[in-house]
Length: 435
Image 1 (cartoon, rainbow, N blue to C red):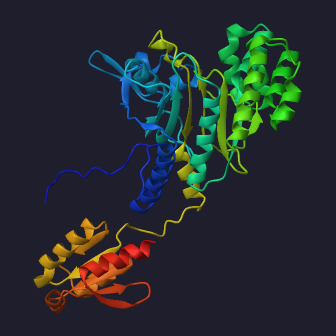
Image 2: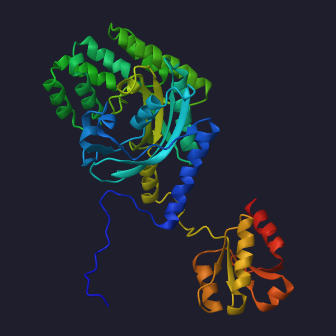
């Protein structure tokens, strides 16, 4: 035996890892969302995990810059992607002459952020994104389509959420109105944290940015405006004389009309700002029903591609925080983790019938039956116990008599019923069970 000291197995904090039975459930969620994307005419895309730093950080700013995993290899300065939207902008700019616009794409992949790990928050996690990119212009109906798609994703995985929607131009216009445009980004960052900060702390930060007490009171009150579109519009009309502010109200109203036509329900809420600085208009987030836990969001970006191309390519996108959503559902016991594998049928053989069992396994798999031959050198009784322990519904017994007759004993482990069937009949029975 080697005298080498064994390394204690451990993983980095904040990086996700599931047991197979949980991974099966997670993969099912991913597949369900991907089907929604496909059914709504979005095309697949997969961009690299690593990007040049100057490209990835082109328009991030704020907290995002502090969370990026950035490093060098030789003379190459690179970052691990923190979302899938900036890589999309880089891709579209590189291939703009090869794409058909509006370009509708989806991408499901891992992203990385160096934030403090906590419930539902990780340093490595999946995003399920879909975006619509226009050429020169992009009608507001695209914003509504993205929000509608967002709602369909949660419905597909049977999760009830409340989608809250706003338009950043309303708050941005108000900030212009009080002549604090030079502090726009910093003010929006503070406002985006209002639900996490004590009011006194937020007020102090806004005061440090040059806002007067009455301006702080008005802008905080503005962020508390929420409800049905009619209520929100009534509270906003005539609040300030600013063109950007009025444009935001108009866009919010128009988006509302399209959403109604698509049968998508949302709550209009001006506290929705979104942390990324590339959002310019419509912004939205999904919260688990009855909670303040956000599990995805998105919005409009008019100028994201401007860092890579002179061609104007506005876009709107959405992202489901599927890792956070799954972890919350798992921790709250809302997922059925009783199923431990995908095997439908276990083939039990003896020493002299192993090759026949392998032949049957191949035939069943060719017919899309998830069959597994237990070829370990164990007793028949041990193999039967193993099938039972793994919760495999059917076992197929392949003995010498069965090989001669080509009729095999198929046992239903749940009911105890046993059938003598040919391979073709076994395929037919298991397929009919799925219906």
